[in-house]
Length: 270
Image 1: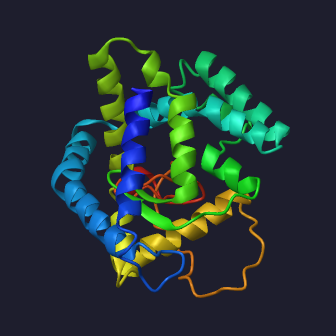
Image 2: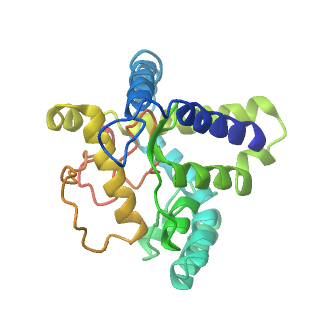
Image 3: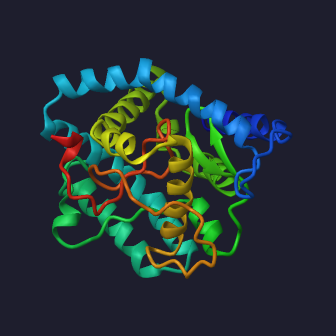
């Protein structure tokens, strides 16, 4: 499973690189022509496949159950988040992440209840792409990956390391169970974002440009833990985040998984 997912990411990277002749005017997005086509593909796939499934899931699954499911998957991620915090030279945050996992896996009943947050152990959002950025590796060109959405060359490489190094689903030998968990995670995550689309549609004249600028600025903010150094180039659009629940991964479910933990709106926009 790890090799298959990583191979798909490598193939996506090669597909975008193969379209490098389609250069755009933005130096951060030299492959804009190809990226826009992938963006449209992802958007259509979401509109006609993933979004209807997420709406059905939301309709039949009570909010407390959806929250418990989100907590479970978030708890599993805390281990690798902790490793990346250690690699970034933040031992206090790393210890907090491991503490979260210990508390929620026991008192929180396998992570279905987020007891750790209630006792003051903060939820973080770290990955190997951020670790590379923390150590000075540049973004590289912006790219839109099939299915995964917005990324950069650096973050795509980081995503491959994430999948090869830490993928708890790969420990599950029964394929139907493993696939079921993966599908549940994707659909649950997409359901959380059903309310975020309204803000995106209202804010963006060109959704592609909005998502590109938003993604690059948000990744920069994450790398510097919300305190990025001042930039000389102010050409990018202002960072106005779609509103929605919880801290979610920076990797786009068709460019919609872009919601910050500080968002005040309830889950699913309810």
